Length: 473
Image 1: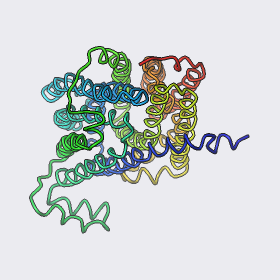
Image 2: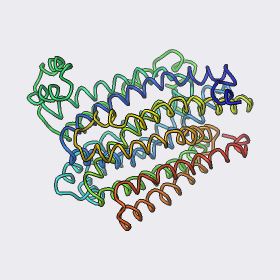
Image 3: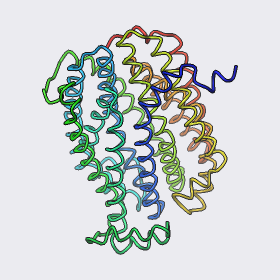
Image 4: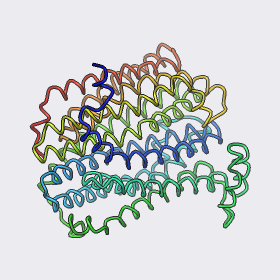
């Protein structure tokens, strides 16, 4: 009986999920590796720098997360039209998405750049970390426009099952980001010391920066590197529009905007976009709560969130493949294949996230030493990382089913559930345990399994209910 949970029950669908997800998994792994190196570079600047970039990154993600709804809407409509063989409408969904992304992200980019000094101090109040967070946030918000457009490209190419493109684009932009990070964070004079102290066997690589002078800019340099890499990503994605199939089969250069389709896309995008805003605000308040407990606690939380985000990035490829196949097979009126895609996707997600969870539980210090040698951060981090190890098994289910429902066209239900659980369990519970009852760092982190367990259970119930099978997009 146990073998039906371990081994694929529909080998054809399992292969299809994996082949569609593999390029995204590899691109996400490259993103994981580069982001880990990224944080490791900043981590050597001290706890204040970690806390500042962590808070700046959280606020930026809060603004960018709105576009996740647009990306999902583009992918959902595109995959459904792919199944219906309406290729021209795939391009229309893409054009609608680009227009919506620009109309949202351009003004928000300007607001973030000009007024970071007004809103950042509300979330982080420390004489050393706050100025760094303002400096980092004001620059990184300029990349919002380019990151938003990249999200739409990602949704379009995933929806038409051209996921291999993501691998090339992501790897290239990540290499650019890390290369510029090293040069701009540490400068030409500090690079050799950084390599010597961190990864001495790679110290020979310092010659790659010797062609010009790089000033040591610290966290400001990290933000500039991210901005340049995000511009490159948009240009690289645009290049792939000239591919024969994108240019001819999907007629992407015959610009078209369909108001009726845009309304349908907005009905998909708005719930998820609002959810992402609410959740991002919730996690920003969670950061604020951890900052009230202590700066070391906040820095530890930032490192743990970095590791947590990295751990589910490979499974994100599985979930996105699941969403595409659910939408495509619904367009072809093959609901049984949509159901099989969901089951096989959960199995593959558990393989990935379960493996990572086991490693977090057994070898937490191995991962933490990548980022810091601060004994306080490592001591707290061991506890937190073991909690995340348990969470991985639950998150694999909830995460995949969330994408499955989105692929079917139901973004409202998971948005409401996730928003309520984030604020009701994590934010409120963290304040009570961490600040009112003064349990400290451990209290808020014990809430994570509760949150993920409830979310996974509710998503399983919703999928089994089956009303998603009747949704028209």
